[in-house]
Image (cartoon, rainbow, N blue to C red; front, side, top):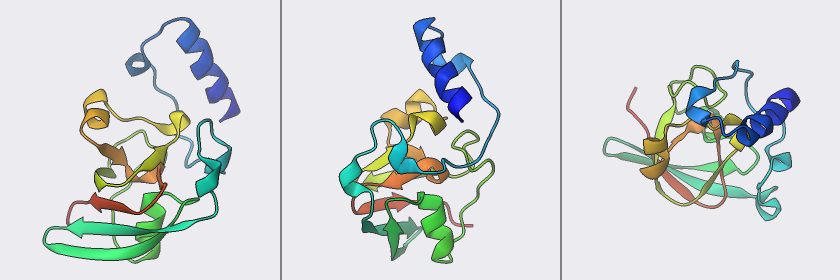
Length: 137
Protein backbone atom coordinates (compact mmCIF):
# COMPACT_ATOMS: atom_id res chain seq x y z
CA UNK A 1 0.00 0.00 0.00
CA UNK A 2 2.73 2.58 0.71
CA UNK A 3 4.09 2.09 -2.81
CA UNK A 4 0.62 2.64 -4.29
CA UNK A 5 0.16 5.83 -2.27
CA UNK A 6 3.48 7.12 -3.64
CA UNK A 7 2.65 6.09 -7.22
CA UNK A 8 -0.79 7.75 -7.15
CA UNK A 9 0.85 11.06 -6.17
CA UNK A 10 3.44 10.69 -8.94
CA UNK A 11 0.76 9.89 -11.54
CA UNK A 12 -1.14 13.03 -10.50
CA UNK A 13 1.99 15.10 -11.13
CA UNK A 14 2.13 13.62 -14.64
CA UNK A 15 -1.55 14.53 -15.18
CA UNK A 16 -2.30 10.89 -15.97
CA UNK A 17 -6.08 10.28 -15.83
CA UNK A 18 -7.01 8.03 -12.90
CA UNK A 19 -9.33 5.99 -15.14
CA UNK A 20 -6.25 4.87 -17.09
CA UNK A 21 -4.50 3.41 -14.05
CA UNK A 22 -5.27 0.12 -12.31
CA UNK A 23 -3.46 -1.40 -9.38
CA UNK A 24 -3.22 -4.94 -8.13
CA UNK A 25 -5.91 -5.74 -5.57
CA UNK A 26 -4.46 -5.81 -2.07
CA UNK A 27 -7.41 -6.07 0.35
CA UNK A 28 -8.85 -3.56 2.78
CA UNK A 29 -6.97 -0.64 4.30
CA UNK A 30 -5.31 -1.72 7.58
CA UNK A 31 -6.24 1.39 9.60
CA UNK A 32 -8.68 3.71 7.87
CA UNK A 33 -8.12 6.46 10.45
CA UNK A 34 -4.57 6.95 9.11
CA UNK A 35 -5.72 7.75 5.57
CA UNK A 36 -5.57 11.26 4.13
CA UNK A 37 -8.70 13.23 4.88
CA UNK A 38 -10.22 10.81 7.39
CA UNK A 39 -12.09 12.85 10.04
CA UNK A 40 -10.46 11.92 13.35
CA UNK A 41 -13.56 12.86 15.38
CA UNK A 42 -15.37 9.80 13.92
CA UNK A 43 -12.56 7.36 14.71
CA UNK A 44 -13.93 5.40 17.70
CA UNK A 45 -17.65 5.90 17.18
CA UNK A 46 -20.43 3.46 16.31
CA UNK A 47 -23.35 4.54 14.15
CA UNK A 48 -26.68 3.16 12.95
CA UNK A 49 -26.63 1.63 9.49
CA UNK A 50 -30.07 1.27 7.93
CA UNK A 51 -30.03 -1.40 5.25
CA UNK A 52 -32.74 -1.46 2.59
CA UNK A 53 -33.26 -4.69 0.64
CA UNK A 54 -36.45 -4.61 -1.39
CA UNK A 55 -39.22 -3.70 1.10
CA UNK A 56 -37.22 -4.86 4.12
CA UNK A 57 -35.26 -2.46 6.31
CA UNK A 58 -32.84 -3.48 9.04
CA UNK A 59 -30.94 -1.21 11.40
CA UNK A 60 -27.56 -2.51 12.53
CA UNK A 61 -24.55 -1.04 14.32
CA UNK A 62 -21.60 0.04 12.16
CA UNK A 63 -18.24 1.06 13.57
CA UNK A 64 -16.47 3.98 11.94
CA UNK A 65 -13.34 1.82 11.80
CA UNK A 66 -14.96 -0.96 9.74
CA UNK A 67 -16.23 -0.94 6.20
CA UNK A 68 -19.94 -1.14 5.44
CA UNK A 69 -19.37 -4.65 4.07
CA UNK A 70 -17.85 -5.83 7.36
CA UNK A 71 -20.74 -4.31 9.33
CA UNK A 72 -23.24 -6.09 7.08
CA UNK A 73 -21.47 -9.44 7.39
CA UNK A 74 -21.14 -9.10 11.16
CA UNK A 75 -24.93 -8.60 11.31
CA UNK A 76 -25.55 -11.67 9.14
CA UNK A 77 -26.59 -9.68 6.07
CA UNK A 78 -25.12 -11.11 2.91
CA UNK A 79 -23.46 -8.83 0.37
CA UNK A 80 -21.56 -9.93 -2.71
CA UNK A 81 -17.87 -9.04 -2.55
CA UNK A 82 -14.97 -9.82 -4.81
CA UNK A 83 -11.75 -7.95 -4.24
CA UNK A 84 -12.48 -6.33 -0.83
CA UNK A 85 -10.34 -3.42 -2.03
CA UNK A 86 -12.85 -1.09 -3.67
CA UNK A 87 -11.74 -1.97 -7.19
CA UNK A 88 -14.06 -4.63 -8.66
CA UNK A 89 -17.50 -3.15 -7.95
CA UNK A 90 -19.21 -6.40 -6.86
CA UNK A 91 -20.35 -4.73 -3.63
CA UNK A 92 -21.63 -1.55 -5.35
CA UNK A 93 -24.10 0.06 -2.93
CA UNK A 94 -26.38 3.09 -3.12
CA UNK A 95 -26.06 5.58 -0.24
CA UNK A 96 -29.57 6.91 0.36
CA UNK A 97 -28.64 9.25 3.21
CA UNK A 98 -25.74 10.04 5.51
CA UNK A 99 -22.03 10.36 4.89
CA UNK A 100 -19.30 7.81 4.36
CA UNK A 101 -15.55 8.11 3.94
CA UNK A 102 -13.98 6.44 0.93
CA UNK A 103 -10.22 6.19 1.05
CA UNK A 104 -8.51 7.73 -1.97
CA UNK A 105 -6.23 4.67 -1.91
CA UNK A 106 -9.12 2.26 -2.51
CA UNK A 107 -11.66 4.30 -4.49
CA UNK A 108 -12.21 2.33 -7.68
CA UNK A 109 -15.61 3.86 -8.46
CA UNK A 110 -16.55 5.22 -11.86
CA UNK A 111 -17.18 8.96 -12.10
CA UNK A 112 -20.91 8.38 -12.64
CA UNK A 113 -21.11 6.27 -9.48
CA UNK A 114 -19.55 9.10 -7.50
CA UNK A 115 -22.01 11.58 -9.00
CA UNK A 116 -25.05 9.43 -8.19
CA UNK A 117 -24.11 8.37 -4.65
CA UNK A 118 -22.81 4.84 -5.14
CA UNK A 119 -19.94 3.41 -3.11
CA UNK A 120 -18.20 0.08 -2.89
CA UNK A 121 -19.28 -1.25 0.52
CA UNK A 122 -15.90 -2.91 1.12
CA UNK A 123 -14.14 0.48 0.91
CA UNK A 124 -16.70 2.85 2.47
CA UNK A 125 -16.73 3.72 6.18
CA UNK A 126 -19.60 5.40 8.04
CA UNK A 127 -19.10 8.93 9.38
CA UNK A 128 -22.53 9.09 11.01
CA UNK A 129 -25.86 7.32 10.71
CA UNK A 130 -26.16 6.03 7.13
CA UNK A 131 -28.94 4.51 5.05
CA UNK A 132 -27.97 2.28 2.14
CA UNK A 133 -29.71 0.14 -0.46
CA UNK A 134 -28.19 -3.22 -1.38
CA UNK A 135 -29.32 -5.91 -3.83
CA UNK A 136 -31.38 -8.82 -2.57
CA UNK A 137 -29.28 -11.99 -2.67
